[in-house]
Length: 347
Image (cartoon, rainbow, N blue to C red; front, side, top):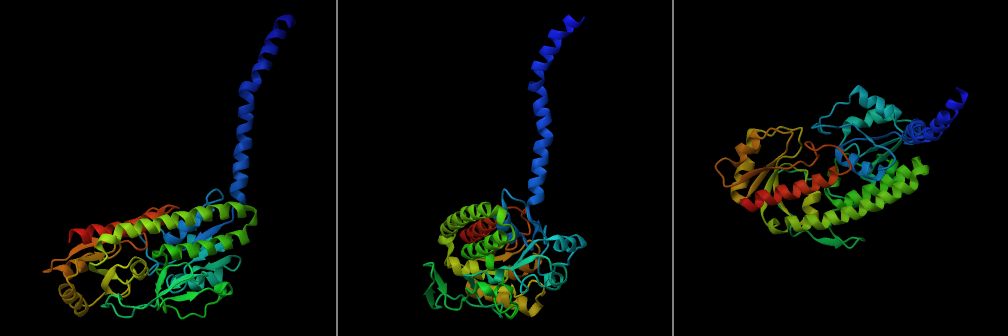
């Protein structure tokens, strides 16, 4: 019996590596993957466009958490208990600033004490445009321009905050500038640079990954800028009305003609007099399109265009209808450009 079993055991021993080594290796690989995930810093972002930029830079390291998800708006958002826990656990927090996410200002002071907090409206090289107080504004076609360091033409009323040490200050006047900063890809590049610097400082072990991803993101943003210029070029001269004044950066970057807004602030419901004023303006200017936004009642737009030749469209400046992720920013910007072109071309 011993002689008979000997060869069989030898054959079994020869076969064991073929099926037992992979089985043993699987738990080890899973453990290694778990260790890499555990090493990733806990990063929290405020809104979808910022989450998209941070996600692109963190690819291969981890996934940032998002506070204002779904179709919610930072203008009216209420912090959830899960959001509060995320802020407490965060190592890094990214937000635009109190002018946009006012709901976050006090929670960050109370819950974000152990985190590095990056206020992206202070990113070096960022172009800021003054907040327009009136809704029925005229286009700025004759405004003087100056050449920026990057070779691009910026309107003379743009304010540049290029002091890296200013990132922790809160001495600016809330609302003194339009906070929809991401609607210019060059501003997105400036914010991405600050995001990268912040992540590298907080997590130097992954610095090379962050920096490599940031370079790839910069190249994509340059290509996106060129693409959008081509999309909107045929309709640049056609005036249109928007639901609220959120598109200044897109307007200035691409030379389009926003003739006015139905309401200055999305939290403010316009009265009958305001709606009548915009209705008259649509007729006087020959505005070809009036754009609503997904999270707001479209009935107001229908009232504004009633009896005129204008058509209606939808713009989504805060990505309310888009799924969060690293590609969201590009989908968002292309969507705005395509919506403008489609509505204005057919009007």
